[in-house]
Image (tube, rainbow, N blue to C red; front, top):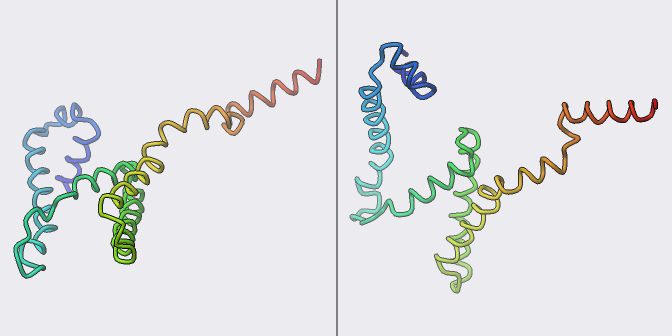
Length: 156
C-alpha cells in the first residue's frame, strides 16, 4: 500500500522520504498509533480477565524478554521467531523445574535466562573478530591471495 511504502522508505532513509514529499512527523505518529493498537490487541486478553480477577503488573518482565529476544534474533524476523521459541521453552522449562525442585527459585531461573542471553546473544560480538582471524583462509578473497602466494613461491 501507499502507507506501507512510505513507512519502508522513511525507515530506510528519512531524508529521501522527506524529499519525496512525505511528512515524516505525521508518518511517525501514524506508525506509533498502529503499534499502540497492536500492543492493545495483545494485552486485551489479560485486561478482560483471563484470570477471572484483576492482576496488577501483569506486564512485568515483558520488556526484558522482548529486548533479549530482539538481541538474540539480531532484529531479523526469522531469528526473532527462533529466539522467542527458545525463550518460551526456557520460561516453561523454568516453571517445570520449580515444580519438580522447590529449592529452585524464580531468581535462579532468571539467572539461567541471563546466562543464555549472554552466551548466545551478547558474546557473538566478542567472538566474531577472533574467529574471523582464525579462519581467514575461508574468505574467498583471502583464499585467492594465499593460493597466489603459494604458486609464486613454488615457481621461484
